[in-house]
Length: 130
Picture 1 (cartoon, one colour):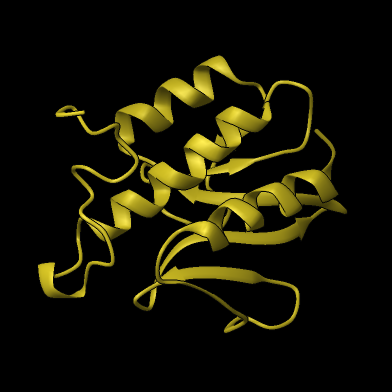
Picture 2 (cartoon, helix red, strand yellow):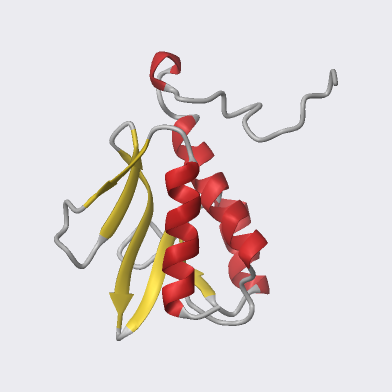
């Protein structure tokens, strides 16, 4: 996946998620995706390369960095809780969609219940009663 595809695909997924807003609080060079004012995805250019920063659970972040050469500690972010995705062939569309969704849910679950646009425990999971 090249840089423009990485940005376009992750932006499309982020904007599909309930309550997401696109902001530019750090200037035009940063696309910042938030839910209820809390950041869960950032896009920028790093050394000429389009990258995406996403929140991740610490153990997941570690495993992702160990298994994917194009996932590194979060650029300008807490290295335990954030990852940076670099464009390449090792990150496919489904993984990208899953990582954006997981980042979103990690942020939503920290919001007060009355502010949550979805229930993070059940969002995106099939209805088991069906």
